[in-house]
Length: 110
Length: 116
Image (cartoon, rainbow over the protein chains, first blue to last red):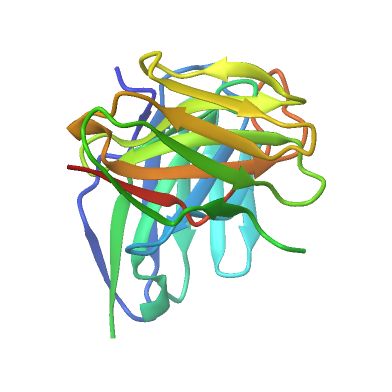
């Protein structure tokens, strides 16, 4: 079983819609969770961190964490063409080691 | 506050050579982590340094090594390069690591290594 899984294929959403991304992780004791955005040819950029069960909102982004189900998600509201990128889910594994999922490509269609 | 800097940005080497990559973390950050990103494997953890000590190491061969200096700058070295080492090497900067997880990490622009 992979440490972090992001199974959805490329996601196409119309401008203004909500994009929903999901991620599952295998280690039940994981404590810290992150979402990164990576534009083509660029390095990952941190957009959200979440450590407790529930929702965390930051602007148009909402991260949701459910430790019992080992599930973390990211919602992007009012999607904009500038949100077109690959979104990487990362799980903290001790001493600052991050385990990453393979990422989900999001395409926002004007 | 200046971000994470990495040098060089691009490198072309041939098989068998060695390479050294450099990373300067955000001012005040003392933890530096290194990752390798390839299209096939995604982002994989190489190692993490804090206070000049390697505290964590990923599943990479011994050809991959690193070090951290007293000013928190870090270098990683890859010896006897192989074609499969072609990748984007990313450095991430963070505050003091927590034993039970990870703090927010901020990535540099990366070094694109091509091995011919």
